[in-house]
Structure formats: C-alpha cells, structure tokens
Amino acid sequence: MTGKDSGTEVSGGQDRITREDIENKFRQLTGEVNETAQRMSRMAIAGGAAGVVLLLILAFLIGRSKGVKKTTVVEVVRV
Image 1 (cartoon, rainbow, N blue to C red):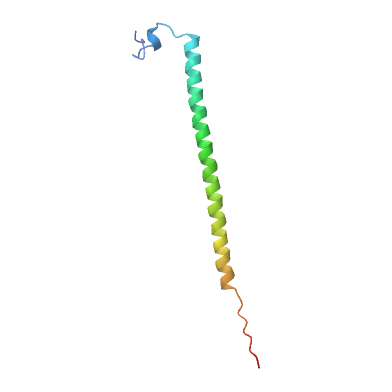
Image 2 (cartoon, helix red, strand yellow; image 1 turned 30 degrees about the vertical axis):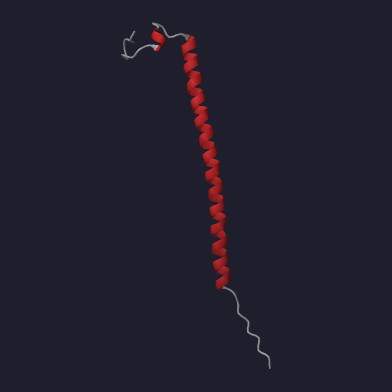
C-alpha cells in the first residue's frame, strides 16, 4: 500500500499506523540521538583536554623565553 499524500509505503504493509509503530520509531530515534550525543561529548572532552595541554605548553615556552631575555649576567673578577 502507498500513502495518499507522500507516495511512500506504509511500514509493514499495513493500512494504519498504530501507537506501537510510533513508539518504536520514537525509541529508535531517541537511541540514535543519545548515541550521537555521547560520542560528541567524549570528543569534546578530549578536544578540551588537548587544548588545555597545548595552552600550558605555550604559556611555559613564552614565559621561558621572557625569562632568558631578562637574565642578568654577573662577572666576578679576582684581584
């Protein structure tokens, strides 16, 4: 059977869409959304951690180069 408006076949070849069909499809979609959200949150945490490490390394290198430029040289001469 085909739907009157959309021209697509109704799931399972039935004429009517039951409450169970809607609930099953909703559960399927909800599961997909939850899986995608979990994957993205893991990726965001990993990306954030990498960004923090990169920021710390950059701050260390900038501070080190400024420290080297401002170092005072003291010469000791024995008489």
